[in-house]
Length: 353
Image 1 (cartoon, rainbow, N blue to C red):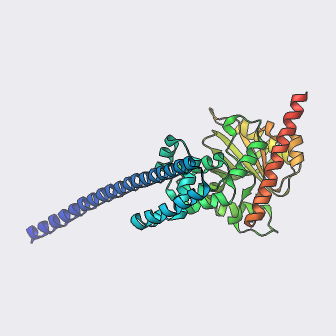
Image 2 (cartoon, rainbow, N blue to C red):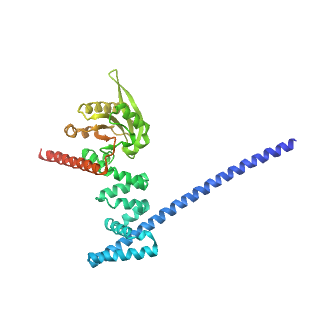
Image 3 (cartoon, helix red, strand yellow):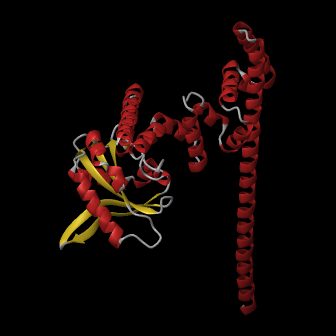
């Protein structure tokens, strides 16, 4: 009986060992297959993108040489029909014209090689209608940096992220180059589901309830630290709304939430909080803390007169609803033009002094 028990224990022990060996082997093989599949996909995607670029380049050169619009239309129609018949739907006329656009907009083959390794053809199709090369480059870098899917890229473009970043850059043109491209104006917080009658506490609670999406809207580099941080100044309690650390900027970022219009007194409040953070919270090696005042409506002339950026403070609007496409385009265009005009006025004033 004793020997039988020992044999049973040995059998159980052997089974456990075999199970562990099998599990480890399966995991290793699974990872190997996934990694190879991923590399294969990247290679195939890159090759396909380069093929499309070369096809577009060849057609463009042929059409330019012949310099006849009707001839160009006819040759593209005939080519796409025959290519589609032999090689499949990827070569239908609409896609062939996209290949021509792609080759026309991106003429440097070194840049195309880099993009082909990071973006799929579906990503690139979304970039083609964008008006500026700066916008195309911005979104291409975002795809590579944040590993954006096609649907997420589409959403970023639809929300005018590039233009919102430009508006913030223009407001803070006096900041050093390291601070550029880190903020937006306005921030789109439609994912919070807030009503027009919300209070500041509602806004803060909604942000913390969906912190992951809020961090995505803030942009790469932000890390949440604390809410309602207590500060004791002259024996009085003060509480800042949201405290973040920006890894790329290597500095604390304090966010104050205002449900109404920006008021000049908000600057004094933010300055006080930033001085306190500088004195008591800034670690060795970190840069000076900066502040972001998020308000339902900005007072842009006040912000310009107060020269907030000189004190490390940016003022930006937050929108709880994403307007319809045409209205959004109009509003962002207006804000961008106003920001450019303000910058020109500032530069003109300084040069005349």
